[in-house]
Figure 1: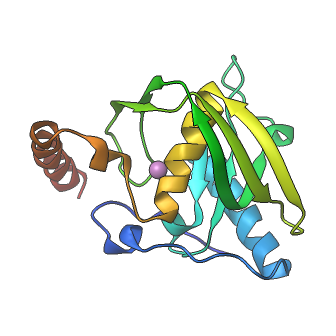
Figure 2 (figure 1 turned 90 degrees about the vertical axis):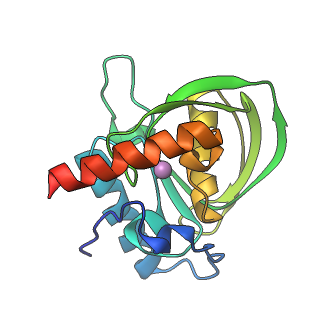
Figure 3 (figure 1 turned 180 degrees about the vertical axis):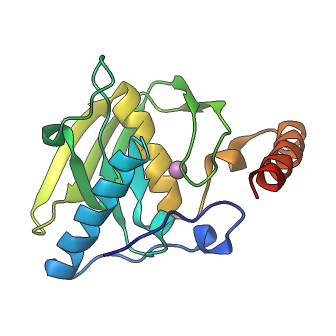
Length: 171
Ligand code: CO
């Protein structure tokens, strides 16, 4: 499976992703390809819509203190639902689909998360800190939302200018 990360302002990033109902080899191939592309691009999380697949699938691998992302830390999350949120946590977020831009974003510190694994088994996880932030960021992608939507109007305008300049330079 050869996947490519799509980038803002690609309109496909605004599509709402569909629930996964079939847990077959096609899903496993997608998960494997997403994991590879996430690690290859030094990402900590990736939603399927970022590789133009509009399904409710996420992969995450939060780096250790030494920056390593061992395969055993890989978390595959399908059809996630949050049942409880608390606290606040501010983190300087970035996104593989919004390259070169980072901004402090406030989200919940603690989450109770329900999801399915690659075989369709249901799981519940209590998460906190950076993993909690990353899951909320990736779940926003499933609704067609991006972290830049959370910027104040003036900050957003500044971002749009900087981003256009970056895209031009990169060509
Ligand atoms: Co993102």
